[in-house]
Amino acid sequence: MGESLAGLSVVVVNYGSTELLRQNLAPVSRAVEGLVVVVVDNWSGAAERARVSELAAAEGWLLVAPDGNEGFGTGVNLGVARARAAGARHHVLLNPDALADAAALAALHRASSAEPLTMSAPTVLRPDGSLWSAGSDLYLDDGRIRSRRRRVPGARVEEWLSGACLVLSDELWQLCGGFDDDYFLYWEDVDLSRRVVGAGGALRLLDDVTVVHAEGGTQTVGGADRSGQAKSAGYYRYNIRNRLLFAAKHLDDDDLRRWRRLTPRIAWEVLLQGGRRQFTRSPGTLLVGLRAVLEGRRIVATELRRRGAGAS
Image 1: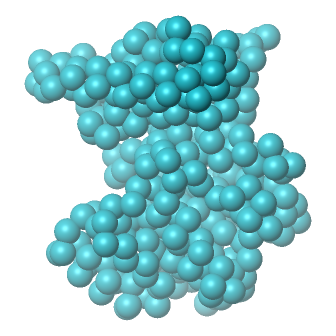
Image 2: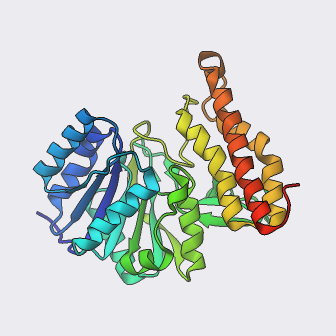
C-alpha cells in the first residue's frame, strides 16, 4: 500500500461501464490507503447491476444503487452524499473512462486541502499523450464552447472545468449545492463552475497534474473525439437542449434571446461533431437535433414568460 489519502473520496457514476471500473478504478483503489470509493450505478439492466455489485463487494467500494437512471449530476450528488456519510471531506468526481493514478489523486487531495474554496481539475490527456482538455471557455455572446488555449482575444468568456475529473472540498460542495439535477447529462459541469464562482469560490486548472481519458469509453461535454465518429442520441439531445437550459438559468434577457436565435446554427455544429456520414447511416440523427432545438426553445419561452419579458 502507498500514501494514505484518508478523508478523500472518489465518486464515479456507472452506466454499463463495469469493465471500465475494473480496468481504471480498481488498481488505484487497491494502491491507496484510506480512500473512500463510491460507485453510483445508474440502472442499465439487471445483468450490469449484478456485475457492478460483485465488483464493488470484491473491491470494498460503497455502492449506491438507484432504481432508475438518475443521470450524471444527480448520480454524483447521491454519491457525494454517501461519501460524506462515510467521513470523506474532499471529493474527486471521476468518469469511469478516466484513469487517475495514486500520484494524481494525492495531488488533487493536496490542492483541495490547501485551497478548500477552490474547485480544481487536472490536465486531461488521451491515451496517446495528446491533450484532451486543459480547461474550457464558455462564450457568453453565443453559447459556444472552446478550449481555453484557443481563446478569442476580447471575447466575453467564462472559464469552466470539465466534469471528467474534478476535486472539491466538502465545504465548497455544500456552499455551491452540488450539481443541478435539471441537466441529466451534459452542461452540468459548466453550470457547477459558474455556481462555484458565484458562491465565492474559485476555479483552478492544475497544469502539472494529469489524468488519462480513455477516449471512446463514455462521452462528456466538450470531449468530442477527433475521428468524427457518430455520437449517441443523448449526446446530441442534451448538449443542444442544455445550452439553452443554462442560458435560461443564468443569462439576462438580451443574452438569452441571442443564444436562442443562434441555436439552429450551433445545434448543427454539435451534430457535425459526429461527422456527415452519420446522416446517411442514421437519418434520425437530424430529427434528434430538431427535437432538442424545439425542447430548448420551449425552456427559453417558459423562462421569458416567468420573467414577464415575453417570448419574442
